[in-house]
Length: 199
Image (cartoon, rainbow, N blue to C red):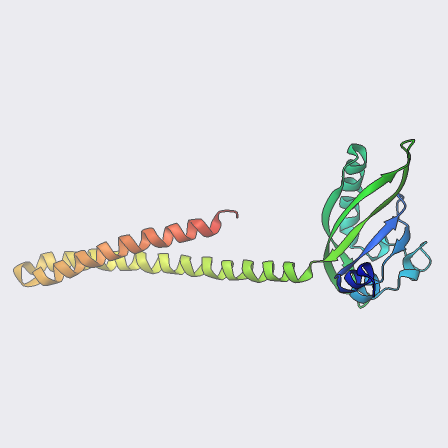
């Protein structure tokens, strides 16, 4: 097996060459389109059965048009993330890197690039975000508990003062409770603030 065939067989995505029209009419595609997304290349090449934009999430098509248009104006490559609908109906997040190809006279011939499945990355990000939301809610619960502890410490100090010499030991305990609550609250606030800051 030659190098390119071997590498393309392991790729979680596909390579393409297409026209710069509203459907991004495919001229060539590698077989990763079927292996990863369930569509045969000959269904999409030339818009025979479906166009490429018809398997994209509708919300993402205008974003692609804008980014590709800007890149072509500047004659630079583009990189973007969007969703492709699998033949079974669910969406898969992909990242695309592409660019235009011009002839010697400066005429745009076609677009080409790679499209790679990054769904597992998005799933990990979602899981981490969910964990951070849980941690943030727990930080809020801790802060609330520490506020109650501070109130208890204040009340304990008042009761110790009323008890006079007999409450001196209780007064020391109340002071330590206040110190613990204050230092713990500072640490909890620092953690909570760090969780709210963008990465």
